Image 1 (spheres, rainbow, N blue to C red):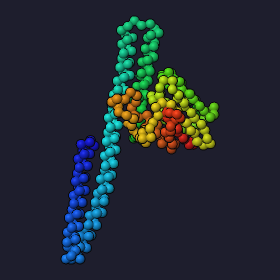
Image 2 (image 1 turned 90 degrees about the horizontal axis):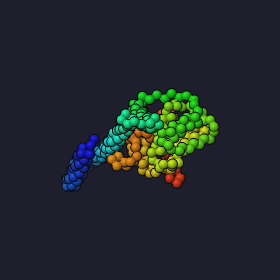
Image 3 (image 1 turned 180 degrees about the vertical axis):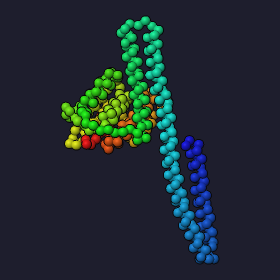
Length: 299
């Protein structure tokens, strides 16, 4: 629903409510005049007023519910528009970069070292493009309940070390890890947990300065596994924490945004945690930054 349709709805709703009140006012006046002449007529008018009041109350409740739906639709429409703007930019950037690298190799007489460097950058851009497309596909599968969860036992420590190595290679960002034990065996869908970690680390790098603190941690407490990612970036306001796991939601205006992204990462994380019957919490880091903490039951 667009804003023009919403405006028409609000105007019509206001008109109906005002008319109801106006009719009620005239009926009350008429009742006072007729009450002097006939008690029976007065009683019937009071009954009509009572039924009209109930109808008006139900109408107001309906208008309020429709208003909530309209506001949700408008917000979703804005987020979808932001998503399209973001995806267009995100798709064009790696494609343009790869085209430039290939053209440079093709048209210039480069040394083997220079050629390898450009090829490495091209592979990194391709990986970034692949990562974004995977996120879009995963979000679609999650919404349609088409992503199957296949639990297996694996070492969470080894998985986190693998994620750390990958991001340090492609981003040159130093990542710290912390474990309560040398080996933490987790029974879960390995692909889902890796996707969760990838999105949280990607998010931390995106909203942190170079050489900022990024910590991946994991601990075991009886039959529960707790893990997450901490950064000391710009953090998330209380208002945004309420919506940060919604699909397409991103803080700020997409047209003037400097950070890359599609608004799908945290939505995917929250949905995958939900499929594992787990809990995800967005906490503040001290003195600044964010701590995304995940709790899974290990069974």
